[in-house]
Image (cartoon, rainbow, N blue to C red; front, side, top):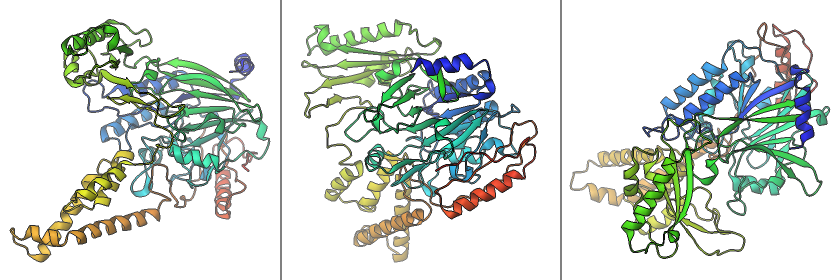
Length: 598
């Protein structure tokens, strides 16, 4: 980071705190990860509570969360209840809000039933507002195209934004914030499939709306949740895709902690964009990148200058990663017991090691050993090996990760064969996303026909289960098929002996009914949402904006301005919202905000 920008915030910080945004930045909290694991079920929740405690201790103005707040698209009631409990305990209170929203909130929060920032609701006392986007784990799906963040939003606990209205032509409208003389344009884009977003960038179908008045006086902060590391030719977002007017990019999805701002220069105009990657607050992939100590970022913004301080998380479970090569043991490959004993000794040495970067030594550590088995060695049972360390490590069934390198089949890319599987294995160019799980299933079922289920419906249900974490998709399909078959048999008054004959005779009819029912369901859903997918969005018009009455002692009046370049209906919503806002009580000024968007 340029020292001049950091020093500017540092030198002037004591002069006028009224002009400085203090923001806690976190991402990839994965609440609910391994909630059925006796030892690790509370790891994600404990780390998230520490994040909220830090926000209270540091007296921040707001929290920015960069996606994957939850680990699953449908978190359990226990996880959802605990999350809401934490948000209410640490983010509600009488502490005054020292900044104001000056953009059209009906546009910023168009996906909400109550399109207004939560702290302006007169029925709630919000002390620390949270602004967040969805990730690839907790993205909208299913009926209504909703996610768990919508539940938190309608309960007024968070401000959920960044949900694109048109996934084929994305326009990102910023939330414009003002604190004293500092103006912050907060851009957000929830997770979109990387291949699609990569294609949209190449086609110039991703647009950023800029403040119309004095655009150079705004600090431009962009939150996104995408692959940063290259996993294929189009399965990531290159850093040079980012527009040069941005001052800072908060990059979610990548779990490696790289909080310190990294400079990205555009070759065409020699402009500079800074990127901060907070990483996850809990280890999920057990990769080498997660060995680094977990941090959150304390971001200070004054004028167009910024500064980032790293705040370590102390409740994170210790994690040690190590790589060994069986060839270095000089043990003959056929002596499996001796090889296993050698690996066991290596693991014991790791357990005895005290990791410096993880202060909480009371928790059993996570141990991950990459075992390279080149040279004629064969992998042995990981589960059987892990039983020896049940009371010594927190992940006995995933200690070992057998790894074998192969010669590159395509220039510029490495192809790895990891038997235990790790996130981030690189594929050959041209093979990315060419065959899905559902395609493979359909091919198999064309050879082995099913009796009751439609092969295509089962493939679609499997795709929803795998890609969208719709855990009930296959079960719901099976229940429907059983109910459908029962109705057929009852209508035919079939005897037990004749059931097989009736089912076989009407097999194609049953499958066509299932496919027709699925088609009607999709058509009904498309009337409510643009596309049933990981990166789709509601197409329903938002509810009329709620008029904020304010509250005494809660700071200055928050006014809402219209946005240019929008439809007439949006302009009318903006005007009515601004008029309603001017009638509010408890404000010291009734001025209209100067900011608008072009």
